[in-house]
Length: 151
Image (cartoon, rainbow, N blue to C red):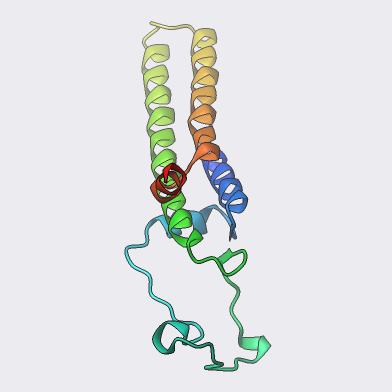
């Protein structure tokens, strides 16, 4: 039996891209959802009020970003963090559904309560439930986006 959590990550990364945040992959989206705090002042514009070059790093030592915002709109960052949290919650829900159905089907199949054919049908049905649950990420909107749209 196979438990597939990739669909949640795929839909989450797709929704992030639609909203201006490029995320390297599912693990980075999940890590983004674990953030408790974030601080940055890349160019000094927050502390000084004017852009300035603060450091020059040779290209060979430049690290690759796991999350990149398209454009200079930092308001997309809370959306990306919220999406990471929603993705993580849906992955947990999908694992609970999958493992619960599998455990139930193993017990009922081994005790003879359900034939193997019925067990396979229920297993495939649970796969559809998991996919439908993950598809909710494509409709994700942060509470900030929802509030701004209502104003």
